[in-house]
Amino acid sequence: MSLAGVFAGIFLLAALYCGLDPLHHSALHGFPDFEAVKVDLPPWSEVPSDRDALNLLQRSEIKFLNQIQGPESIAFDPLGRGPYTGVADGRILFWDGHSWTDFAYTSNNRSELCGPKTSPFGYLKHEHICGRPLGLRFDKKSGDLYIADAYFGLMKVGPGGGLATSLATEAEGVPFGFTNDLDIDDDGNVYFTDSSTKYQRRNFLHLVFSGDDSGRLLKYSPITRETTVLSRNLQFPNGVSLSKDGSFFVFCEGTINRLRKHWLKGEKAGTSETFANLPGFPDNIRTNEDGEFWVAIHARRSSISYLCAIYPRVRMFILRLPIPAKIQYLLHIGGRLHGMITKFSPEGKLLQVLEDSRGKVVKTVSEVEERDGQLWMGSVLMPFIAVYDLSLGCSLIVCVEDPE
Ligand SMILES: *[C@@H]1O[C@H](CO)[C@@H](O)[C@H](O)[C@H]1NC(C)=O
Image (tube, rainbow, N blue to C red):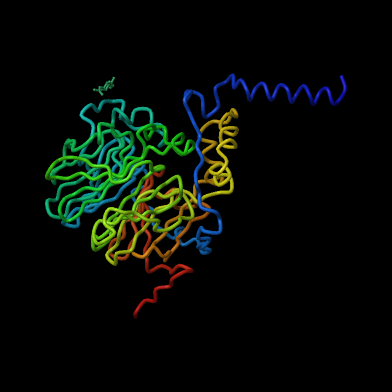
């Protein structure tokens, strides 16, 4: 056989292997109805390119290593105790200053299925049974803890903990698919996100890959106990946080790497506008005492994620290759897990970028909670909470001088 014949043969076999995917490695295996739609990711010229060349997040302290798995959200109660955090096995844990204790649950059907696993991905299979508490916030007046559980919807538990009560599981007759984050205003209204009605959290990779736009921004009224839709057709809405004065809230459209501002008061009430473009895929948002917004960036956007966003056919082609979803995900986020957080002014100006671009200490941050000059960072993929002391260094963008 000629050399050309050998190459042709190899090419044919490779094409057959990719086309037939006999070992079911393709990320699309098991998703026959999968569709990829175009994502209007802002062009590179409109995205902040600022970097933290000093990788200041590497100076964070790792706390509670291997005592907690996948702490997504971090909350302190109105008496200043905590932190409280929701972990991968579905529990909400409380740090009493000495040790972690079980505080609350979202599932009334927990069993040995919810026991410890070796990797954070190991919990995905039973999350719909065990629960997966994501966004947590305390109502400062009542001391009740509000919970956005990815599977059980919007819930609430009293200051004593225990089994949480369901507040809402649907809006307009459409069940929530992936409840994600929340905030509460002074009147007790809860603003929260349902990331998708089509893909659950355990299929979040497919939610990201598809560009699905079934996400909704919702409002729960404690008086009528009804949930209304404030915004719909969103691509992976995730974090949500009220402004300090309560005149608006900011939420993220994860797939588009963008923050939106939704007005609650004033002449623009009920309308929304772009707040800021982000350098990557956002997760939760938390407001600090100065009214600035800390936005956790799950991963910086990459050249591959940009190409895949604007060319859904390229995305479909790559997803059909016999490459497992986890590897596809790594390609999407630039090859390695890394750490990045950003801070925005109430006007949407980028104030600070802190990074661990090689993921040596901090990776895939889910939430940043600022408290007494420290940043508490949770991550759905990490077995610890990272704490960064703001006095350690200033960013390259804004260097806040110590007055002393
Ligand atoms: C309760 O959990 C078991 C597995 O432990 C599961 O088979 C069953 O479907 C669950 N029931 C409900 C109502 O979710």
